[in-house]
Length: 170
Image 1: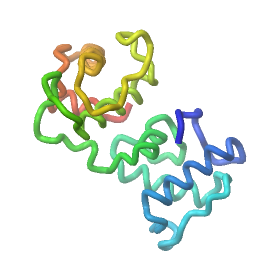
Image 2: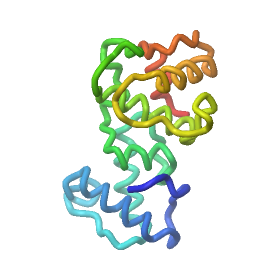
Image 3: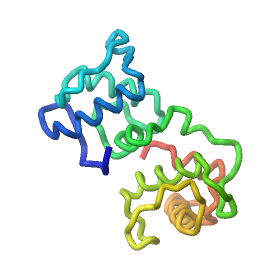
Image 4: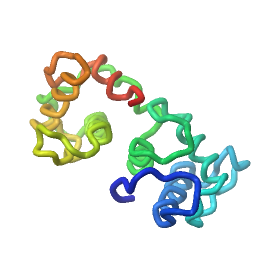
């Protein structure tokens, strides 16, 4: 799956993108959807009722998504990166610039910040964060901006309050 193509909804438009969504829904559920009686979703490019039902089930299990049957930016990202339902749960410790190495939580933070910022961050010259799992200076800048916009001190540390705001429905 590539970059977000714009909102996808029930109807005949954007067949190739709908096929990507159908394929990812099948991959994530290993081809067994409860709303389809344990069957695989057809990958036909038609955003019909079965695709909508499976998508709504996917959305219901991710508390930061709205179960509306539309594929918005956050839905696309959750499908693209296979963000699991537990992603919204606080990992139990703060993340900050001194963290070294690749970290799955830092990747989730970077993905979520890109979703919220529409892949354009003013502190980075309107470019997206690189999703690498490294809590470097760019990630700290974008976290600080996010915190200030949400009324928190812009310290660049993803603590429990910042984490909760990241995963709140936008």
